[in-house]
Structure formats: structure tokens, C-alpha cells
Length: 236
Image 1 (tube, rainbow, N blue to C red):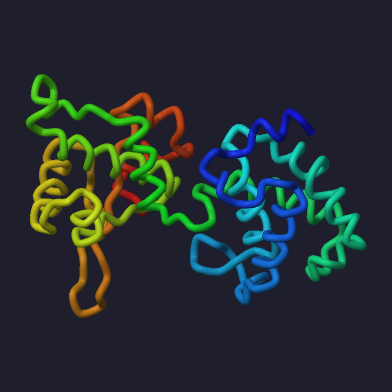
Image 2: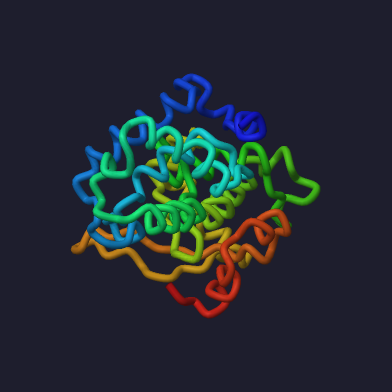
């Protein structure tokens, strides 16, 4: 129990950090999830315990062991509330366990975050240095920040395409949207980004990109398996 407590993420210290508070919060969000048991979260719908798992994981650092969290936190807290029926999933305990630990590895950002905001935080903690910026770090600092955000966004999104919205990124980086457009063009020219799908004005769909995580060791060590290969294939 003490080992798990040391794994609690500092990003969530403003919340109740008792195990009881964590599980109460997760149960509340779980029961409010009207998309529960409606498929795959990557496509906008949920597996039965997706929201519950994501809420619990939001209070723990990425190094926390999901088995330890399940058996030392979830099990006793659920037992104290009368048992697994409180989840209203019609799953038996073993099924609940396997869905929880499998979902855990797929959760890539905390409750209250977006993939983009998560990437911004990672970029600030672990900035990348694009080759274009070598010897010009101060002059091209914002371009380096853009590349860092894009790279960590690819890690956050796993083996899927990423979106780099010019308006939102412009706000986050305090530059004009057109500047973000030029950063995107430069990153494509530099070989960091690849356009997977062009935007469609009539369908109101955004341009989709892939980032070559193999260009930076910091990313490659964290990226989902197959991300680099997908960039070179140009696959979605």
C-alpha cells in the first residue's frame, strides 16, 4: 500500500487522494457514462470499464502497476461497498480484472485533459531539438516547441493519426494561426510530419498527420509499437 501511495501523480494533488475518494469519484463518473458498453474508446464509444479505469489511473503516475492498484485499491474498496454488483456491468470478477488491466495500458491522458494539453505538458518537460534549430535554439524556439508538441502528441495518440489545429495551437503558443500553418509546412519539409489526409472544407474535417517518432530517441522509447512503421507507410 505504501508503494502505491508513492506512485500518486503530483498532477492530481488538488483532488482527494485517499483511496476511498478515488474510487468514489471513479464510480460516480462510471455511472454517468452513458456510452458505457458501446464499443471501442478510440472511435468515440466505451468499453464497460473504460471511464472507471481512466478515472482511477488519473490519480497514479504512469509507472504504477495496474495489478497492484486493482488488488490493493479497487478490490478492497469495492468489497467495502458490497461487491462487484455496484459496477452494474454483469461481468464476473475475473472479467472485470482483465478489462481493467487491459484498459489501463490504453489510457494515455488523465481525466480533465485533452490529448493536445497532455502533449503540451510533455513537450515542456521533455523538449525536442529539431535539426533546423541546431545552433539557433533561441531564434527558432517556438518552432522547436511546435515540433515537440507534435511529437509528444503522436506518443499520446498511439498508433493513430494526429490533429494539429491552427487556432488552438496558436492560442497555446501565442502566435497567429497562419504561423502554425507555416510550422506544419516546415515540419513536413523537415521530414518530421507527414500528411495522411487533407482537410475537407465541405465535410468540416481537419488535416490528419503522422509524426516520425524514430527521429527522436525520447519519443521512440515511449511510442506505441508500429508508430514509426506507420509513418513511413503513410497509413492511418
